[in-house]
Length: 352
Image (cartoon, rainbow, N blue to C red):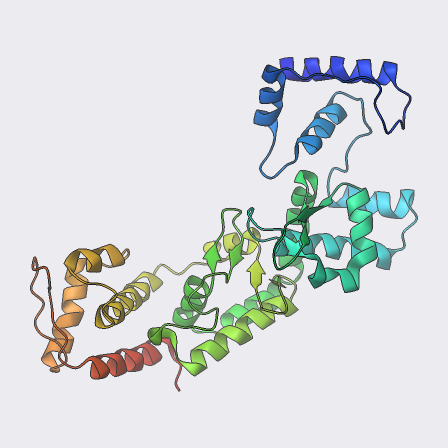
């Protein structure tokens, strides 16, 4: 990589010798070898543009002014270099944190511009000029959105960790207001983990217009709505799309939750997984034993068998026949669903 940087240094020095600073049009074409291009491409961080990485390398070898290093450096430059007051600076930092949290997965446009432009247009302009935020365009529902650059991502993450520290008592108050079992379900089935580490309700069981029968408990869905609203209010969640409600939480919050995980909840998650599997089987979404076993991850077949044994004793299903293609039969589908709904309400501490 040092070789690549040296080659880049030579290219950029030639450019600076042949062109005045500030020239917007180049009079000579500078060719980049495939080897150098590949080296730069390897050096590039996730979701970092080719221009970003060239500029970063140019900064490292002293051809461009040093980049903004961290949140403190950004704050100092805004106040001492650009003359922003404390309130204006705070708004710029908040806008960066919102974009960092709300940009969701790598394959998206980021935070749709309609979501934030009306309140933070001036701050976003500053962030773009400072190369901490960039636009990402797409011909879809939203024509473009905002994503952080590599440096903006680092500072956005730092700002998010700061808000977690500053609002920890409020966040703990929110989390502690729920039974451990209910909180585990709200996180596990209310969000999906994206490649970036963000938690998004995109495609999650509780989001969208259709909710599976096992989760179609009004009180549970109300709790989920309240939970996400509180996380947004405390500054750790972002409604990515107000028109369709797309709640996104940052990777740092996922790490925070992992640190306070209760191992005893594993048994609860097993029960829920078994109930989900039974409902899917009742709806003919799982046809045979192979499908049943493929649908359970935490629980084991003997634990599924034990649950079916209880339902069989109450006359709701047949015995569980291990090894058979159709391991059990449902005698009363409606009664099975009612029983599962009641068990779920008792397990989570909610009631219709």
